[in-house]
Length: 61
Image (cartoon, helix red, strand yellow):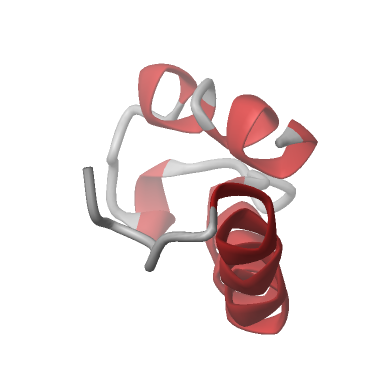
């Protein structure tokens, strides 16, 4: 939850400029990579937890 909550701010803060127009320490690229890595590592575990709590397949309503 914290990763997604923290991530939601990035699109509002990142101006989407080309790398040549950003300062060398701009965190946007690293933030995208970190989010993608964490999502890949945690998505299945989170889905299993949701299924265990709800008893239904994830994505079903």
